[in-house]
Length: 138
Image (cartoon, rainbow, N blue to C red; front, side):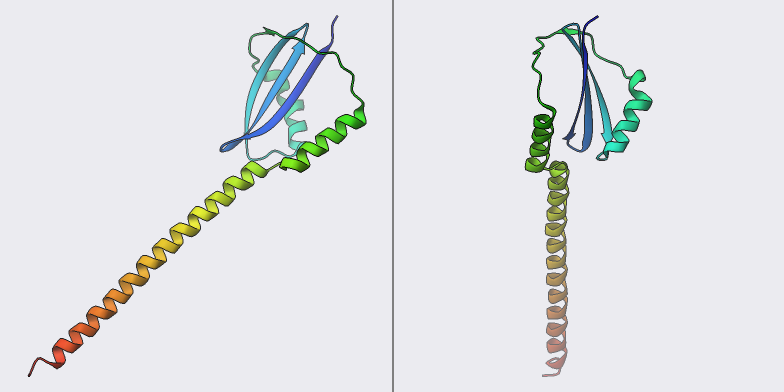
């Protein structure tokens, strides 16, 4: 009986959060992809694994090269902290939200500018009409 290794990688793929389960067993790798939607919390991921792991549909097995390198758990923890602090967990989603806010801001500016110009034009037309009415008798 060989070793079985399972990895869950969660990443942001516009516009949803996606999880990829990889199972490596007997030098063969199988994978399953899950779409979460909103950014899942650790407790939600744990609950998902406990509840739905048995029902996942994995891809056919593919041969792979498995490196057997034992890493220090503290080093693994340090690397995970470094990865999450560099890019941030939700930076892609934050960037998408920020981009949407900027787009809304531009749209709002354009609408208000057009509204202001229309109001100025209306007032100008009213002034012109008053001038014409004043000079009607002469």
